[in-house]
Figure (cartoon, each protein chain N blue to C red):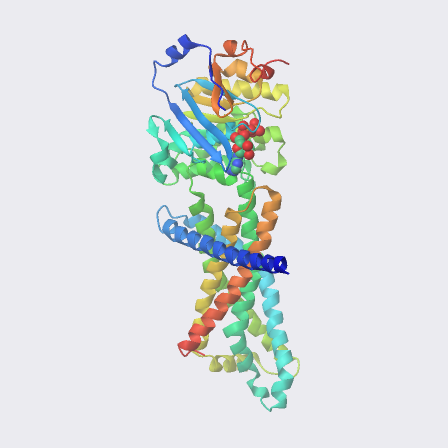
Amino acid sequence: MISTPLHIEEKQTALRNDAEPIIEVTHLQKAFGSNEVLKDFNLKVFPAENVVVMGKSGIGKTVLIKCIIGLIKPDAGTLRVFGEDILVMKQKELDDLRMRIGFVFQSSALYDSMTIRENLEFPLRRKHHITVKINIEEKVREVLRNVGLEHTIDLMPSELSGGMRKRIGIARSLVLDPEIVLYDEPTTGLDPITSGEITDLILDVQKKYNTASIIITHDVELAKRVSSHIVFLSDGIAYAEGKYEDIIKIEDPIVKPFFVR
Amino acid sequence: MTTGNSHKDTLISKGIDDFFLESSELARFTVRIFREAFRPPYEFKEVLRQCYKLSTSSLPLVSITGFILGLVLVMQSRPTLVEFGAGSYLPAMSAISIIREMGPFVTALICAGKIASGITAELGSMKVTEQIDAMEVSGTNPFKYLVATRIIATTLMVPVLTVYADVISLLGAFIGSNTKDTINLGFFFTRVFESLHFTDILPAFIKTFFFGFAIGLVGCTKGYYSKKGTEGVGQATNVSVVVAMLSVIVIDMIVTQISGLLGYL
Ligand SMILES: Nc1ncnc2c1ncn2[C@@H]1O[C@H](COP(=O)(O)OP(=O)(O)OP(=O)(O)O)[C@@H](O)[C@H]1O
Ligand SMILES: [Mg+2]
């Protein structure tokens, strides 16, 4: 039983279609056993765009972005990133592609046997370990300053609070100057002030490096401030999509509850 | 009656299934390790770090066990040897049993308990907290960086630890001999080296590499494929120790059979 997507904004979609998408997901399917998580999911992300993905818990948002970075192999469909089909890529090509993408894990996923400094150095050392000699220390301090946590540089992840870990997770994904950033619930579980700061950070990053991002969130404030486009994931499909102003007007039992408070 | 029987049948067939599943999982893992480990970029630094970590963490345990092993062995066998008027064979006898069997076997069992469980717990919790995924998205092949390096490290370090345990154990044997009669160190070791042949040392040394490989392999497989949740990690760690110890015992038996066939016994 697949519900029909609500196409609310035809002319706007036409407008977005002008450029070449930087991420293009078509007819994506993924099931875990009998649990069909994604059924026929389509998504386009254009350069310098912030696409917000919303949807109920357990609906498959994390599965979606893990497919995009190649951590989960979909059952069917195509996935093009920077115009290249990632499903047919060799390991080496996939690794090179991944270095151009920042991924912020829902659980932060900091390396708990390493200090914050080593956590941030890890991607840098992996990328540059033979080729370029860049100033690693300087870069690490710069991204830490961006998230306002320069003083934690020599601490272990276990010594940080949940919110701080989240910010370090964001810092780590930005350390390679990615062209795409995928954020998995960057503000969930944080107080409004910290959430606001992270929202500022996401906007800053987008402006400074002109990145495209997918942001998974339930945070209406975040969605309102950063989204150029919102996609509502439900029942394995892009159930509704459009600009924030249009999405909030939808009178639909699945979409509406996210925006009334 | 019949239900009881069929229940037993299913239990047995399940056991057999599990065994083959386990073996095929280990075999697939082994193939992948050989494929990955010999392809650049090589993770020399990480291998060295793992070697250092593994050896320092098990050194105290190996030292104490090795020492006591030698000491007790001599104290236990001495009365019997003396009874047969063969007291002077004590150094030779202890050397042969330590170098051929006790040293490698006990060291491998200790490493199975200490190293395999450590690796499983570490990789398992990294898996559960998505740290392995995080490595993968920063363009690092976790199989190479985490798994291959650890297996190389155990394969190299278990033999080193065994040699060390052998030496400590012989020292223990020397001190054990000295509790009843006075015998000087030079004389003791002269007798030890006189009694040892190349054919005693070589098979015993070669099998330690297999022990090391098995311990690393089991530790990594169990950790890498551990189920979600902290309970899954605990369970995996438990199974890892059991399987690692069993592998050591089976390898020991096979190597002994083969060296017997080759005339090394
Ligand atoms: N590795 C996996 N194996 C089996 N099932 C999985 C796996 N990963 C996710 N699922 C299932 O896929 C569904 C979607 O999970 P997902 O993590 O994408 O949810 P989500 O939308 O991110 O939810 P939340 O907002 O709570 O994070 C869930 O039903 C989950 O049980
Ligand atoms: Mg999620």
